[in-house]
Image 1: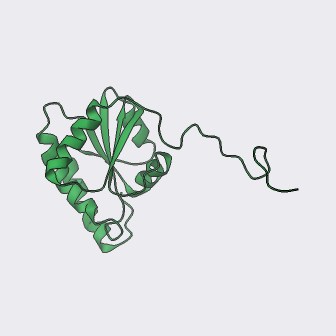
Image 2: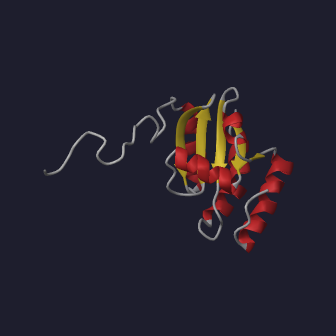
Length: 155
């Protein structure tokens, strides 16, 4: 179940359930986000937030099935619930919601942030499907507490 943080998020849950039933866009919870992406080929995971904070969530959720229908070979598509969206967003340095997270066999390809005009929306998806796998942002960079070596000031 989607975390309900406002009346709008309750209505959003209804829209996402329709996407699942009418378009086969799975709703992901918890570790299912990584399991889904680890499958064969390209995947697109729609990351959402409370519509009060990110009203474009409505637009992307409505337009996404139309955009996928315009593709000759659409990727596997799912939408992450809010908690899973936040966890994936932190991991992949997502700064703006909604966001479409693209992965290939589990490896990071890229992110498209926010809602785009129709003339840019489908090409953005096509571009991500053609893009190479790359190192995910924020992954692989060690973070050390202050005083754990490296640069020091004064003294």
